[in-house]
Image (tube, rainbow, N blue to C red; front, side, top):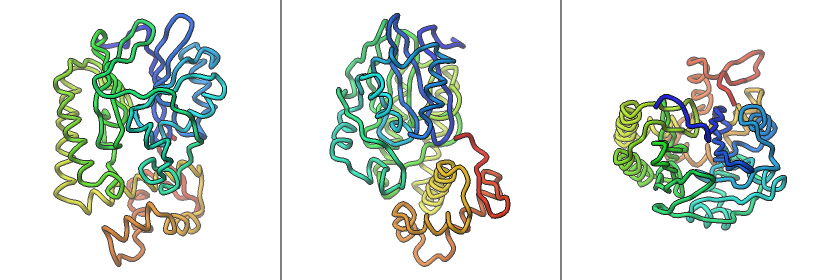
Length: 309
């Protein structure tokens, strides 16, 4: 299998905005993940232009997990369409609690307008829409309530941030901890029992082919084991991912003001104190590293990001 089935449209987006997936039925559609709140206009255009659907036809949003880069568009789309919103049972509890740390909202300095979860699912249950049936698969690790969705008929897996074609979806040390790395490894290993020809990740391009999927599972498990043995590398990688997200969210930022704001933010202050106590100019060093790798750019003291939001 080298192409998606006709009832599936893949909307590849960027780093700040998760990928989205449209599942078509004759008179309605389901949408997996909605990206960050500032990316809603682009999502609406993609749904219309690439999937040929109107928001008036949106029947259901299904979230792989509750982080703002996957749920930021939920509130707007729910208000426009009155659609159902489906999350895992764990995520519904977290969302209803408003936990600012686990949800990666206030603690992470990320926005996510409030929305109402109308249905919760658990691993092992089946979610049916149109002619497709998706089995809910435990995907916890990157996020406590993360789940994947497996369609056996199409040999297709919608895997959120559990598995990407390249790179690794970070497990934030002060949110999920070492236990998060262990859960992520366990969730990845369990995917080997599934017959998957196409995996649709939360960020980046499709993973196509059974061998390619299995190789990425093995590669990701090796990354997890490396981070277990090298916690300073784990923590610095996570901090750099936050820097990238915040530059993308700003669009353009004056370096001095950006560094000062981040240094006051809990996501940086608390993780720096835990993993790099007493290290001076840590955030400047992280920015310099990203500039050296050409992930960030600097023009007249203005930071921008080379990656797609």
